[in-house]
Length: 221
Length: 196
Image (cartoon, rainbow over all chains, first blue to last red; front, side, top):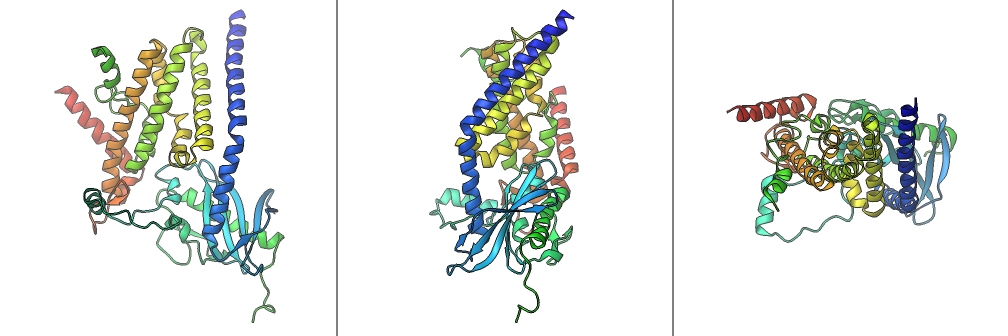
């Protein structure tokens, strides 16, 4: 009995120390992490919606029993040309946060995954960008010291995310063959592919349900 | 440095390789070895965390009663991993973007607990440091070996660059069965060598 109490106390001390040190580190790093996330959000907003000149304040809308965020997107004349929706869903092993840019009719301009911690090599491939050169070209480049090529300002979007551009709500199904009318899953990562697609689908459908309405037929020419 | 000091580091590289001989940490060895880049990311993160946890556990081994050592080690390792993850995210966002995924996976990597239990709990902090570095590097060597085979055969790539333009790769090699096949052949080859 005395032994058990002693062990319990020692474990309590360890857990207490761990808790205190984690709290300390959290306090020290919290603001910098939030700032880094804010920067990633701002960069992502511009990258997937190049037509927009500026974005409005963050507002919220309900998705099921959770809340998601949206931003209005304005062109240079201050006319609202679309929205960006921020929604988080559970992936295979981590929460996945997806930013979706849509125009006023609900057609997707682009999506960007802002954070995920899926399995490297499988689910995490939703953020993979393939190299454009072959191994031999890269090695030859190393030897010959070809002057560094002019790099694009922003890295290209990963192919998995790029295939969302131009799609509408009804095309957000996940299939396993190459296609133009649906979303092609990443091999070996169906659950992650489904989760990202669900994040986009839920965000758009609930946004039009609760916030805006797609223009009705009388408004279109 | 004495011979035994060097030996403490290098034993993990090959003859006591954590994956190929001790069969520790097989879960990440199978999961992240789809590309050499991933293998390196996991390897570097593991070297770092394993060395730190080995040292801390060697330092506290005197005050932990042996009956509850496992939960104590787990608390230490989980705390350490979380601190590393937070500090990287706050001060080195680029590194965090590249290896943050692996850092989170390290908590469940049994190499860390295995070395804490088998080595750090019985040796000095200095020797545990050497063991951590050596075992970490050995882990990385095994991961890169598996990943190189799988990436070339399964994706026709190495470091993300295409190897044989026009050749259609064997897709199953980047999926789970390919991981088991590659690991099996590597373990077999290693065993053959040890027996002769």
